[in-house]
Length: 251
Image 1 (tube, rainbow, N blue to C red):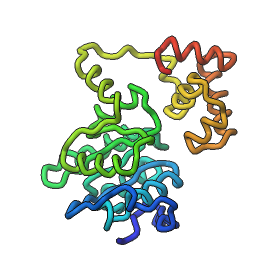
Image 2: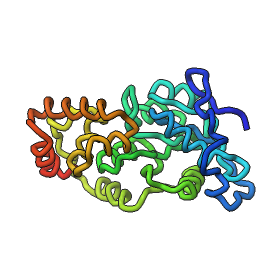
Image 3: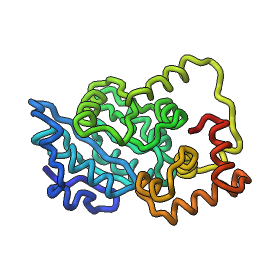
């Protein structure tokens, strides 16, 4: 299998063949199934882990043909490789997954060779799920998904199915069943996607170290995001922040 394309010209899968959990563990044989996939996530270690878990083509049928770490890279790689499925993180530098979907709309609507998107994110927030589905993604799964289920989800999306992690489908059904536009929250709109993510985890009682581990960022970066959130919302401490988030049902 050829090395996947990356917008900066380098491979993002060095060492993938030495992973502790080889792809044999996620598949009992794929027959003739084959799907070309691009990974879009701003954490290189996460992309490498996904590549090691599902990208052994002979066992899983999944061929990772490209990677990207931000919006511009994603559009470049997706346009160049024309994969069947893109695994797309919701929170990306340059505008997020929704911006990738917007700029790739012509590829999604191609009747002969449609590029389909499956969101793969740590976030399970309703607004994130609804945002990417409205943008054209065929499904949304969280990063707690197993390798086996992720492979199956990729093939289902390739075939045109809609795929969701448990309970996330309810967000979509509720959103599209409602004829009322969601209210605009000007305070929440001041926050970046990453700040919202940190906000939710803080409100759920996570310690800074736990947040850093879950989001693949440093503790200092978590502290910076929390300070920015408190400043923008004019709050004094994490207890006030938790009450604020709870009142808006963001937890």
